[in-house]
Image (tube, rainbow, N blue to C red; front, side):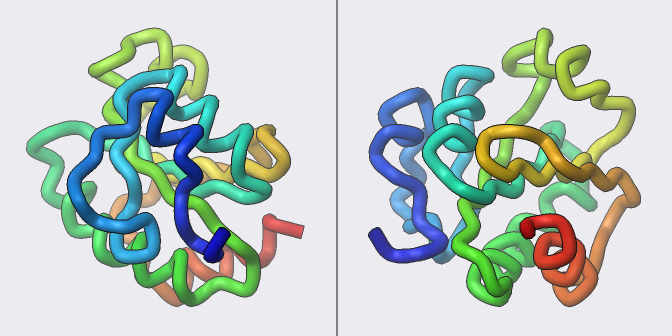
Length: 131
């Protein structure tokens, strides 16, 4: 499997197919089951929690694709709207969006909720915590 792509397992678990490969853009995750499949299948996964209408969230999507291609590790990248699956708000303590959660071996290891994060900063953060 090529790095930076999402396996069929995550896609079959509820990720919406938008016709773009994981290397080009993050995969949209429909619910907690799709999120769990993504992070369980990937060694390292970066997930953005967003809401519709959030301009900063939308502006991060192309940045996330660049980060996936620019980090040292194989990285799966996903987007999930916790309003589509409300228990995610409590499970990940979503207080503001965008919220970025980095998973290693299926476990959340780091999180950031600072608004727009430049790609270089986000890539360095991923590389720092994905060891």
